[in-house]
Image (cartoon, rainbow, N blue to C red; front, side, top):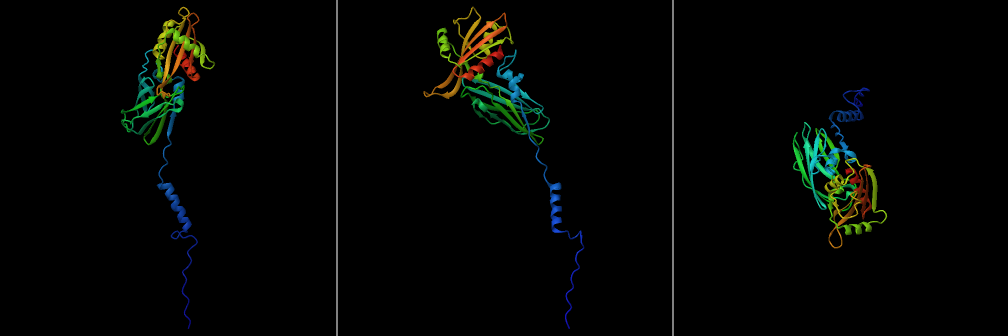
Length: 309
């Protein structure tokens, strides 16, 4: 007598909720992990580039860079502020070197974390070194300070950028500001006799070394008294007396751009700058001529003086 064949288990129903297909189970777990347990994406950083706008005409930048406005304090002041931070600068320059203290205050109602400031020297060629921030976390109303040492290594006509970054309520911020360290900060007056001035003026008469501009007086009268004060105090030009002054309508002066670059003899290189300013009080106009050995310095110094007159 033959043994009966073993009984077979009945096939599962076409759709058994207690025995799902492996592929369906994987899909369900994948969807559950993505939709329910995944961390939220990080907040996109907020970037503000105010550097170009500041250079083109910002009162706070102008006050610290040149100080032409009445009552302006060129030595210290607020450079920038928004709802989150206020950035203040205190700076001093001697020869080719500058010492800048950057202060960052928390204006927001929440703490600021991961505070950092950096310098983008760009095309200025400024040699720089940042000291450590006094604090990288600021409670509302608190401030941190950082020392920045600078040295002018070559003539420049652009501006460096101060980049301040921080995190507020989980959102990273980056603010790019124009540093008010313009090349005129590294000028020093040069005392010349009339004869030496005339000789050097002739030496710098080659094509391309001179920049000449005629423009209307906008900051004050086109007089020697007004112009001398602006040149001496704001651009650090030493007036040379005894050169043909056109009966008091022409002013001559000399200054030098100091750099930290040394020559073969180990001495720091300077770029001499000569200035001739003609004044027409009746017409309310000036004619300015600047000569240096570096063409773009002639242009930059001329433009800086024009803004003051």
